Length: 483
Image (cartoon, rainbow, N blue to C red; front, side):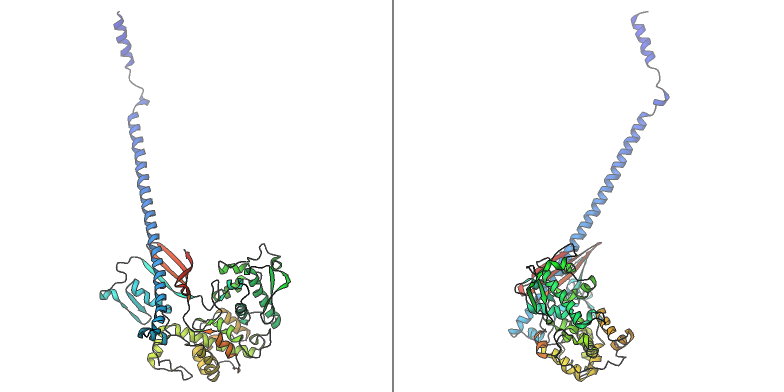
């Protein structure tokens, strides 16, 4: 047999069929490829959808931010117009004169007026106008929502950081003492009044030492007059704490929680009356709270011995002061509601005491001057208890005032009925106030420093901006925060 024949047989044998287990390899490769492609496509689609949602969320965040920023700028513009009106009044402008004579405070009603611009709507508790239905629009095609809160004045609050100045501003220290001195902050009844005042003044001294630049301990006497030197190092106040005095201005009011003796409860009671910005220690009558009024009245009673507070030592005087406080607070709250004022004006009704508040429809504030505040206390409330009952019904007392009432034996039910004019007022004492000092510390003009807050909403995103604007400096921003 030739070599060719052998080779042909060998090749024939090599063509034997493959074992069964090796069949279908191509199908497996195809299925694997399809699976990989499917996973890749699904992952690609998923990543695309995630990126789309992220982009939408980012878009919503950006739009919400700029809506909130627009809200801040709109409020700032309206506040600027308030002061522009005052400037126009001096030049004889009719609108400016009307605003000045009526003491109209535009900034109090921004939550009513600004939606006209942003939504084309004017809404009040008794009705409104939808300008969109009349063919008008707000910004025109505005998407999203701008939410406003009325600006909050920083004027009238006690400036903590001014205590870091040298020499120490005694008027600011006195204002802080006046705030902590009354019983509105519910000291124990069985504590000696002088000892109570000493402990409160000790806290005020600790606040001063926390922010002032020196290391000398501050001492306050029974008249709240500060002295330094000879009392040791202020760091001794922090002997049991893990930190020491800051010795520089606060960046936020929460820094007061590091002052020895400052409890969270007391801080929450006083925080609305304090500021870190440079303001003067005046009582802005048309923004004052019940605690402001109580402190102001208690600390201007004539004939009080140094270190004593008649509102603590004499319960009959305290009852009279508390009742006058409710009337003062109620009057301020009444004028905060423009619809309430308008309804009383249109009714032609006179407030008890003969006061005709219908004589000027543009009047939208409780007090037009420091003299009117003093007169209201010394004449209207003293000579006509009915006037006190009328105004007290509009008061919105804080928990601290309810605590003060409890120390006087006023039950919660009596307190509630008194505010509803359904209970006999307490026996009132004749109190002589230092009217000259009261008048010198009261302001009724337009504040210049405001905290302004606005929220922007778009889709699922909400952004809140808060800033402090100083119109003593042409509307300069003193603070800016974003949430």
